[in-house]
Amino acid sequence: MLYCFYIFLAQYILDQNILNLGDKSNKIINNIKKDDARKQTSTLSVNSIKQMVMRQAQQGLEKQGFVAIPSRYILLPIYNDAYHDKGLNAGANYANQSADDPEGKNIPIMGQGNYGLAAHNFNDGKTGFSALQESTNHDTPYLDNGKLKGSSWLNGNEVILANDKGIYRYVINNQKTVQESEVSVLDKTNQPQLTIISCLFPSTNYRIITTAKLTDQYTWEKAPKKLVALFNLKIQDTNAHASWWNPGTEEGANGDAGGTKDNSKNK
Image 1 (spheres, one colour):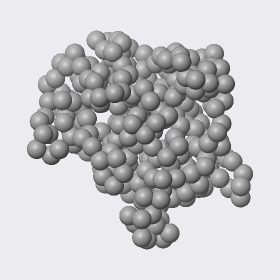
Image 2 (spheres, helix red, strand yellow):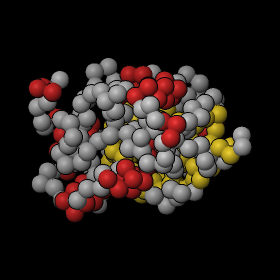
Image 3 (cartoon, helix red, strand yellow):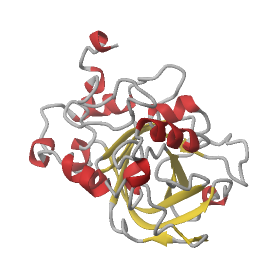
Image 4 (cartoon, helix red, strand yellow):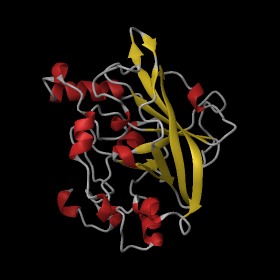
């Protein structure tokens, strides 16, 4: 997550009125709400959806699965490079450099231990993990008079992970704020935990840490249909790309639809 300042600078140049921006996160969420009933049904087989999730859509990166946070309309592929532009510009990535594993040699496993995820915060309330910040372009409640604080505003919300093995349901239990150099958030845990790392805006030298506890895990065949439907990329939009920063083809219905749509004319 070394690129937050540059994203902020690019957005400043793009939006000359950034100093007068109000909170637009909830407005954007309301504007992108879809017909949920339509998205809970699918003519695709479970195996077809699984294949979309695990499709190697980015050269030079290894796909580990997908993350969905339905309440915030977040749907991102998970790749294997959280520490360079290439990975972060493709979507979310597993993050695993900690005091226990400073070089990140151990590949984290969904549903086991402390599974770390990182993605850009574009300060737009919709792209990457932007929608996890309570208010766009406002440090509060995460930073108050120089003191690091947290928030409980997302507590109880689901985070759903998917890989080739199955689907994992986590429930958010906390948000806190740390310095950008703080790696202890990825230390080993006794119980399965999800740790999501994203930048704070406008104070980009801090990170918002969203944690969640594992509650359920399923094989693809045994998973509830509504959870499987979250990853049907023929009808679900993904939100990895901002045209002014990392333009590219989305993997969801707003892009190549899990590899089922020919976007060659748009490239």
